[in-house]
Image (cartoon, rainbow over all chains, first blue to last red):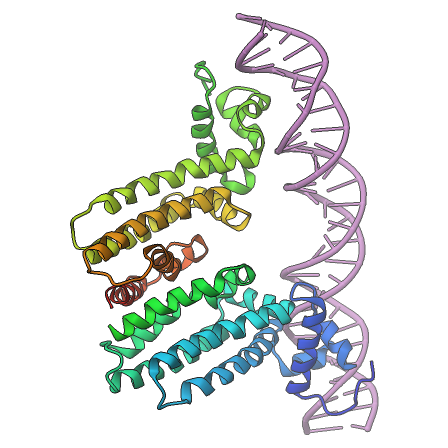
Length: 196
Length: 196
DNA sequence: CGGCTGACAGATTTCAATATCTGTCAGTCC
DNA sequence: GGACTGACAGATATTGAAATCTGTCAGCCG
């Protein structure tokens, strides 16, 4: 309620939007709600974001970027066995998505909605992730641990083959018993395929 | 219009239901429509199928079984290089699902709806398919072409890793350019992983 | 009898009126 | 002057009453 009469920045709007989304969910959250939470008129929000869709995308981007950053740590950690790095990276991706689906179901739903529509932001996110994977595969290829012709193609294949463990469409199945084992089996097969 | 005054069998009801579904889609097809197409009262339909859901499942089962049977041909064709058989089987699965999505969009939608709900029929279908894959992997393991500890686990992993190319949820992406290449890349990696 | 009908109750869907929301912009206020 | 407001038009969502559908069953008809 206290509007915190600081200047209205894009960042403050994003934080408020995230909170409103968390509370109301993507279906019921309106930009009037966001404006009310900030103690301003909704016209002011439109000064920073041209449309509601743009606002939603910006929130999702912020949220996805946190994951990208965490994974970047693992991807950058060169020098170690690339097989281990691929495993850890994929496991971290799975864990991150699963945790988000569990902790912030409403925000996760927002993200899923975006995935359905033509998700510019989601496309970028996926590109960033496969780029990280490509880097690990490339490193492994240089040391001779992996024997693939094109690291980028192999990385995209890895990403797609593990879709069931990071695509929001499958979120419901992430809590069922046995998923861990299924994940391990898929990753085993894939890492063996990289090493050949 | 001519009700074809043969006796009303489950089979005739299924055929009529499939036709009604093809015409109206899963959302608008009613059991009254089915009865009308057969020239009987809807009560008669309930004599053969306890609920509308049961009818829908039966139609889907019939439809899925056609795919299962086609693939069984490839799975049974023992003696040839198992690597080739896995590739052909997965390619045939992809082709079959893609063709169905294109030819019978309405029936395919019915199937997708079932997948969302607790699909008893779909579960069975998936079991049958992975059983076929298991058989191929087992054969390859016996000849020493494949080096996996458990064929059944490997088969399930193969199936899950290729979900993007047979799960109805991804149907929209099956017509985009480049899917063929992506499919090949994933299968390459997986088959290499089986051979190790 | 045994398969079929058609009227029925409760659940679900449709539809149109109403309310709310999105996005704009002339004007206010500091 | 530049950030903000609030009234507005058109688009979208909500609501509740009416229509349709599902599933049952007593009775009909061959």
